[in-house]
Length: 381
Image (cartoon, rainbow, N blue to C red; front, side, top):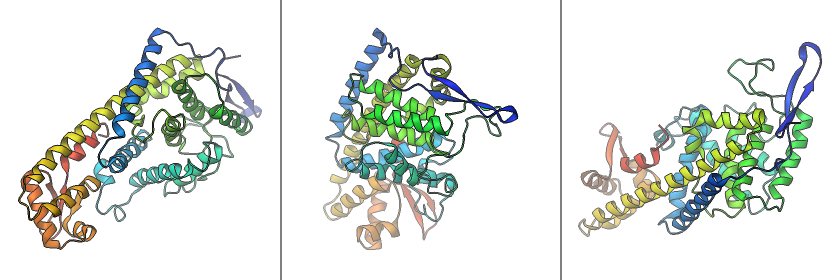
């Protein structure tokens, strides 16, 4: 018997196919941790601890996290082929210009928000994941993919147009899927001595291998990583998402998952996962540093302005950190200020180099906090 699982024969004759049934976690023999992997795990914990410590003292932490979550939503959706950009997510006319790609990202944000609402009330479980999936797939693209329901038919992974005969991977049949999900749920909550980072790596692999939904498995699986980092008390805030690393290494990501199933290579997958945690935590720390440096520099510019418009300028500065693409009319409504007052403040920000005009005519001008967007955009191109 293979360490990672076995193949089940389904049907007979022309309808026959083989589906994969994963072995219950943890693997036997257990994941081998050599000196190099042990050092990588220690480095990952060091960086994650530093990230959590820095996150606790970020000014306007909830605002920063909401911006960072939008980036994660975009990256995770891009892994699945979504063609949205950072500018699309902050589009002033988002609802009017909504398309399927942008909707995928906004539904991801809603799914994470729903998950954070559920965490105090419901343990991470199959029911929990179904709730997330329901929000995620309630969209134009996903409405016919049974949002919030486990699949009741066989699915498969392969190139466009592939069939059960030509698929690259066929997940467990329905009976095996149900058994594997029940076992995975027990493993998530088992009190064991397995290192939490290794445990999260194994859970993500197992979930993607089971592939319990008709669509959205990748996005739910990546959300699960972030939720487990908090569940296992490794992080306190939503400041680390592996999609930055997984998008950049998309081919290896899928290969490493395949290699567990075909070569029993749990070690290679765990190493890749921990490498991703290290790179992503380091990137998040640099992103925070850059945003804080930009904030301090622009706050100093505003502080040096004349006294009269400083209060409006301070309100506008806070506003553009939450809305990095703005127009005068909506900003004046949101801030409760006269149109001309906001127009003058925006003109001052343009003179200071904080905002740049990016579009529109004389009556409808659009401005961007471009330096801020450029920091967030890193990795999403």
